[in-house]
Length: 288
Length: 96
Image 1 (spheres, rainbow over the protein chains, first blue to last red):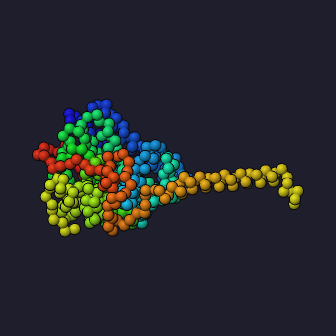
Image 2: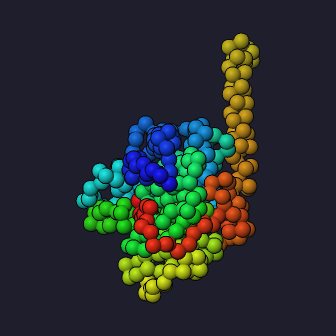
Image 3: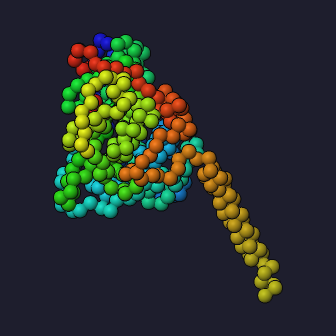
């Protein structure tokens, strides 16, 4: 891997290893395109147009339909935990602007809105959803962009966006872990989800962006960070979010899917059996 | 009254009403066929409690092409991952 390029997109730093100038420009354009379509904070984004539309059925672009279809698959894979219908819940929690512009708010958080992914229908490019539902596809958008960007590389390399990483070829990449330590990722993706960065106060209460679809409020998970490795960044990210939301059941759930997971809580770090088998890292005691 | 029913205007109105009803029925039928009948085969099901236990479903429908998913693991594919060497990290993972 001879070169490393960097740019900013989707509110985070994107780092690309192994790309030539033309490939880096193509990857930058890919992220930009995804941002223009799926941003909750750009008034002209397709996502906001869909969320504003009153019609019960709307036609969406091919990229939107493909990504929404994958978000619905993610919901099915996680028994509804990673839910693309939580836009209103995020706004009720106060996450209604670019995170860089977020400030503590004195007004209390809204009541939240439960997920209703089972009421969303997508057939081809025709979308039907209940009135008032606001989609938020960021559960898969960034990680899919990372995977797609990796596909633009012709040789060995890696793509990382805001801590979500995918790599292939060559010797892979050494991925630094939160709080120290590292792993060697020869092929696949690693993602970390948690409540340590995107958090803010509203009405004196801490809020964060990982919403429990059952309550429609920020999750009360025992974990602060969950890191997962999978075949791709999208898989790793979806699984990390689900494992976070599952709380104490997260490690076993990942084991059931054959995925290694590392869990941080205020009292320490634990890893699941798959992680221990694959990475042979010491296991810390947990008293969560 | 009978004369009123057969005026050209009332006939035209009647035909327009029929046409509207036919169109509305067709729309409802198309909607039902497109979305309603497809419901039974939709892979997305009701949400489950985040605080409850959700077991891995080995028989779950495999997903699409992203990331090289493995149907045997419920739709998630595995990474080729191992312990780190002594070299410095290329990049770090962390909450975004």
